[in-house]
Length: 119
Image (cartoon, rainbow, N blue to C red; front, top):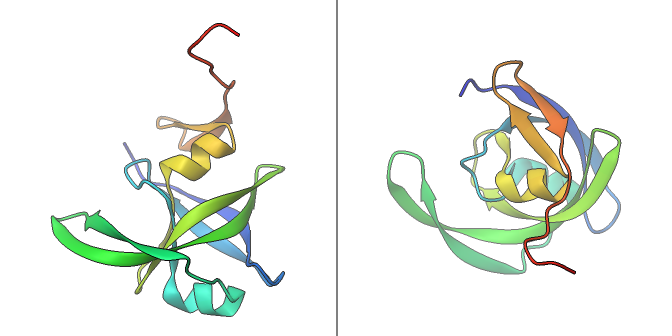
């Protein structure tokens, strides 16, 4: 799948906000926020989680929560705080916003929610 970027607005727990260019990465579990951006947003880590980084390297990264506004929707979502690198839009945030990837057009598309059991 080709990579592409979208602009989202991230907001930390104290209300500090910033527009960020997010690399869409369906292989990433969570939203990934670089440390410098997390510092500006005053994001507070709640715990750490082992991660497997592309290329096979393992690390332990802090996990926090941020608000993400994208495509006229917003959601509070968990995020990894990475030491550096790009901000990534991962699967959990995409699914929480009910968005999917159109890999041909390189865009996000709205999707319906799904419930596996009959209500």
